Image 1 (tube, one colour):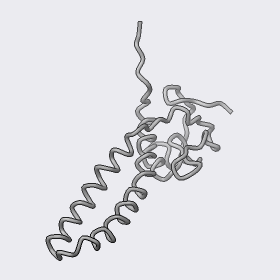
Image 2 (tube, rainbow, N blue to C red; image 1 turned 60 degrees about the horizontal axis):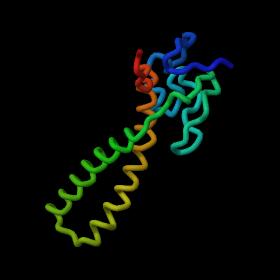
Image 3 (spheres, one colour; image 1 turned 45 degrees about the vertical axis):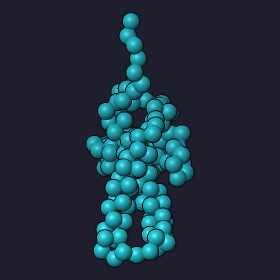
Length: 134
């Protein structure tokens, strides 16, 4: 099997997700063919696509997904907590009982799709590590 990074020109693929690697990544599929699995675990990437042979070694989402999860979840949870406080004035323990588990659930629900989105965008835009030319 031949493997290709994002900068190499792969053979054309004509799957349902081949034209939109972002949709494929959000579905947890290979950004090139849309068929193979992107993840081997909850957040662990598979070594490569079993359908088209794309090596996922190029994929490095870094801290990007975590930053977006913090910003999105913080906006949602803090906004909801402020609304509940102003509208109902519940005791502090009820805030903890409601919003601590909700925060964990929202963060876990957003982390995998946002990591896949970053990888899909990295593949589509052929993003690579910066290099100095001499």
